[in-house]
Length: 577
Ligand SMILES: Nc1ncnc2c1ncn2[C@@H]1O[C@H](COP(=O)(O)OP(=O)(O)OP(=O)(O)O)[C@@H](O)[C@H]1O
Ligand SMILES: [Mg+2]
Image (cartoon, rainbow, N blue to C red; front, side):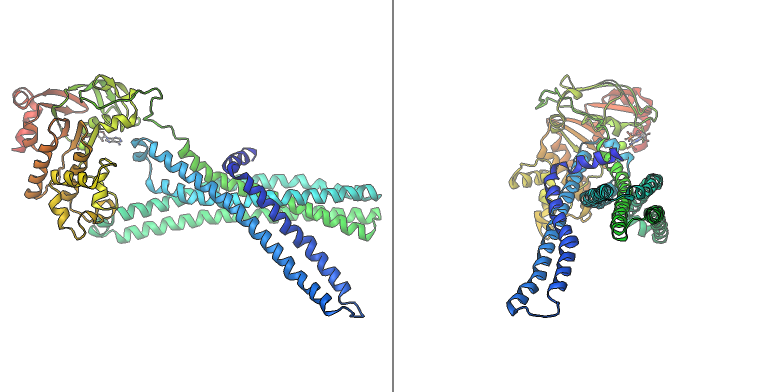
């Protein structure tokens, strides 16, 4: 529990000033309610409603004004107390969310391929939400309960000194330590159940995310019912684990209350035989009751804390995830590059899977075009993904202009590279902004020039809002060929010395395809180009062709040479004819 408190404290530390202020306002409100109101009522009734009723109108008005005034002060204090507390709690959660999001930007590509995006979303939204509830509960109890305990102990001490026989009553406090056991038991259970509940919530979110991204497939394959059934199952599981949290959460108070009542019964019996006066006993009894209640609250506090800690654990998991593609702190600036790329004895594997690339050597001179061919799954995409360090090599080195990639700042390295992928992703923004992603400081004119170079200008102008047309999520409102041309426009705008192209395999209509080919042949001029080509029209013109098979480069050279000596290349070529 102490560790949990430490972690929570670290979260709210920047806002502790607000929390203390909130505590002050909260105690003013509490004190005025407890002492002020009761006291005021008592005095009022004994003075105002005395038998003679001799107060003047002014005096009556003055007395009548006390209540609204008291309530105003109580109301304002309570408001400020709650306001400040939430302001601190919500700010702490905001900070945490931002930290997690920032971390997600730094984590490697591989991390996301192994993680369900819905679960990650749930951690940033749902788990932090749960944390906030805990944070508020904990802060509120932390503020009020210690005061109650101190007050009750003070009173009990005072009575023990003043009265004989009272001290023995405190034997009933021996029942107190017993409550530690149920508190520990239920907190542990709760922590486990809360993790399960949050996992279920993550699963539910993942289910929604996946369903939405596969909207087309769901309809095309009549999967609606299957999807609904799955979702219903998920929702049912979530409900079950939520009810477990409710069960264990609400079991604790009655258990503590029962134990407390036994303690109070003991007090009553001892008090009777010690002959303690009725008035004194009532006070002592009340103080003991307060003490037990405060202990109960602390028990609840522990339970709530373990629930929050479970949520925090899931969030912290992201924060503590090591950054695999790490930046060398001593990296010296790099660029602009000439574009000589060299692979030296490179081995690579995803996770613990068998090697995907083995002893790969390649040299791609600056300004040349290099085509990658080979059967599906032979490692072509993996090879090109290593150049911008989407992944790091297991063994060997990759260098540009003779410098190891790992010795450059990531930003500088990626600045040298433009990537046009098979299935380019667009943001839900205007056409203009989507192209501008290529170089964020480009002017509108530069963006339009790039679009012209990519043969995209014409279709963009025919859109209702031209360059200001919103393309929809992932560019859903554009055709595949249009999306590709926007991606090429981005690459033009970036004008990076190294270009990586994953040629689209999907058949575009011949006009679209021709335009893309034209745009590409202009784009590659003067650049070092790595192209995963599926059309032999592209491949034939490359200065160098790397032939991949099972994660190895089995041959390389220009088209004519390979055609003569490489059996695999020949068969790939013949298949296309
Ligand atoms: N993220 C990943 N995690 C684990 N294994 C992967 C991952 N991506 C690819 N692989 C595996 O690595 C091998 C090489 O994949 P790669 O994508 O590089 O092939 P490719 O040559 O580009 O194929 P294609 O022509 O079909 O695009 C395949 O066996 C594939 O299953
Ligand atoms: Mg591929």
